[in-house]
Every structure is written in structure tokens, then in C-alpha cells.
Length: 306
Image (cartoon, rainbow, N blue to C red; front, side, top):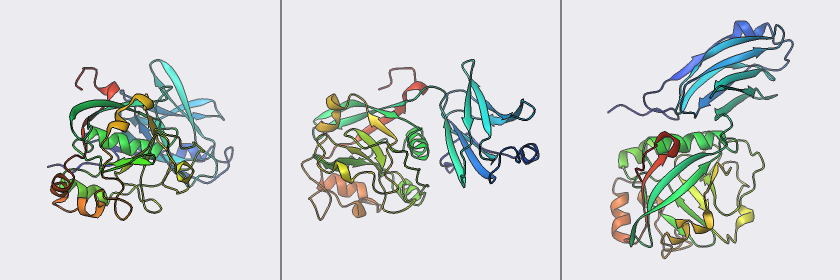
């Protein structure tokens, strides 16, 4: 079986583009250190990226960035402006000042990327309820990109909603396949800068346990959260989206009878989920736990699959 590429999408490739010769001539007009800039295309069409040269007012073609999560990495200087066309409209991206590196998601003017999941509810008494996650790449570009990659690779399909704590949070994301759990557990990705988006009930964020420790586990801030002020203090806690129609959503119907993980509750111990028999442990010890059935990126699927 072909090994998946993260955070790229299988079948897409990582395009590394160098055009140092062009930009060095303009570097004195745009002072600052050269750095690597990663551009990720979350649109449904390939786009061609251009560098907008100010001196000669000339538009240089940089390269093609593939759709559905394709990436290009290239050299940039602070203040350089790049552009691309989507739906006959030109959009612009500016390289930031004083950056060591930069990660940007191309999403045109479409602020949200909608993900729809089917889940069980009420301790699996209800086999299928829908929930919409609104992903906002400008809040947390690396987090949004990783979440969408995991959705496209179907890694959230069949996962347990293994931590449901009323008035606090719900957490999920440990893959059901043992080989995938082992592989993804080592694929940590870099934290995103905190852009000041406050946590409120319904927010989505990756969980972590240290700097640059995010992998696959995601949490949702629950209604009437009594620990709201504690979120966002750690570098890995940056919201990348929110639950649509939150107050009417399925989140309050996910089974919460087990409480938090030990030692604060009688819920599943994550350290017992990650081994090869982890999901057998969940099925045996926590028979009322709810699960995510399947997820899709809505704009990539125009049929009523869920």
C-alpha cells in the first residue's frame, strides 16, 4: 500500500520552486531576510502563482499549486506580493515581515471550508446524526490544513469520540486502525501563531502536550464551559474552526456518562487506546461511547452522500 503523504494529499505532489535569481534583484527594495514560504491550495482548481515585481511592475510566473491541498515551497523576502486567479478574480498574498518561515493557505474569498460528518448519538441509540465543522484557515493555517488532510484521507472515519466532559470539552481523533495510530502519532506538526481569536463554545482546536506536538486529536469546546479562560494559553491551542449551528448540533447528544479520562473521571485512558488492541478495549469497557461514522469536505462532494 502506498504510504500517504502529510500534510499533502495522496496523488498530489510537493512542488518546490526556486526563483532566487529574480527576487535577489529586488531584495534591496524589499529589505529583510530571505525565508521559505509554503503555499497550500485548498481550492478545487489548480492555481498558478505569480510574483508581483514592484520595480518593473512586472508579473513573474512562479509555478503551479495543485488543488485539494497541493503545496509549493519557495523562497521569499519580506513584503513580496504574490497573486493568483480564482473564478476570474485575482487574489493577493503578501509575505510577512521578519518571518523565519511562513505557511499560507489559498482559499480566495471563501472564508470557511465546510466539513460534514455523520456521527452516532445518545450512546449509539441514534446511528446517524450530521454535524458541520466550519474550517477557517486564516485562524490557524497549519491546523486547518492538517485537519482537512486527515478528512480527505478518511482518518476520522470510524474514530471514537473518546472524551466527552459536560461543560468542558469533547475530544476525538485517535484513528481506529492500529497501524495508522502508530504512523500518525509520530507525525507532529508545527504550532501556528496565535492571531488573537478567543475561544468560545463550539470552537475547534487540536490537542497537544507540548510545543509542536499536534498530531490528530481535536477538541470541541462544549456549551456552558466552566474552564473557558484556560483555553488558548498553550502554544498548540489555536482554534481552526467551529461547529455550525452549535446550540442545535449533536454535540450535546454525544454520550457523556463516562466522564473525563483518569484520574479525573471514569472515561477511557488514552494510553490504552493507542496500542494495537485499543479499539477492542473501547468496545469492551465503554459500550455506549459514540463514534464518527464518516466525514467529507462538502465542496468536493456535490452528491448527498451523507
